[in-house]
Image 1 (cartoon, helix red, strand yellow):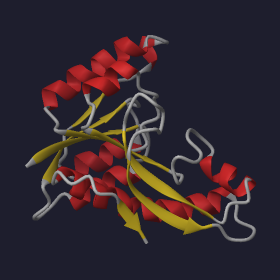
Image 2 (tube, helix red, strand yellow; image 1 turned 120 degrees about the horizontal axis):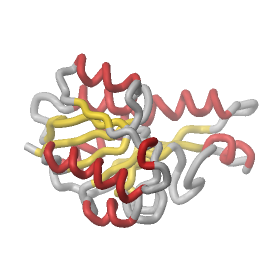
Image 3 (tube, one colour; image 1 turned 90 degrees about the horizontal axis):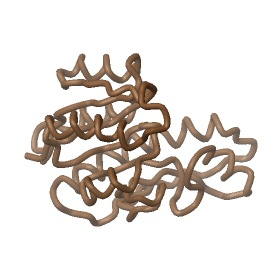
Length: 196
C-alpha cells in the first residue's frame, strides 16, 4: 500500500477528491496533508477525514526557499510518503526539492500542457481564441509545469466564457482526472489517462 502526502495552500477541493478516492481496493492511502498556510481551509477537511495534518509556514523563511523546503522535507520524511501530490500548493519548488522526490511527485495544472504554464491559464486560453481548455496531471520536475504529462481532460471553451466560468467547469474535470491518475500511478502504471 503506497503512502500519499498531499500539499495544499487553500480550500483543498482536489485534496478532498484524492483522499475520498483512496478507499477499498485503491493501491494507496493518505498519510499526511501539509500546508504552507496555517488557516488553509483544506486542513479542517483533512482532519474531518481522519488524515494527519501539518503546517510549515513559508513566511518566516523570507526569500530563503531552501530553508523552507528543508523544513518541508523534515515533516515529509517523518510521514514517509511514497508519493507526493501537489493540490493547489502555491509555492514554486526548487530543483533540490524536486530532485529529492523525482519520480514520486505529481501536480495538477489548469491547462492543456505544454500550453499556458504558470498562472492565469483560463484567461490566456480565452484570449488566444482557443477552442478548448482543460487540465493536466504531470510529474513534477525542476521545470515549472514541465514534467511528463500523465493525464489530461479537455473542456470546450464556450462563446462569451469568462475565466471564472471556464475555471469552474475545468475544476469538475480536475476532480475526476487527478484521482484517476493517482490510482494508476500508485499501481506503477504511467500510461496517461485521457478524459473525456
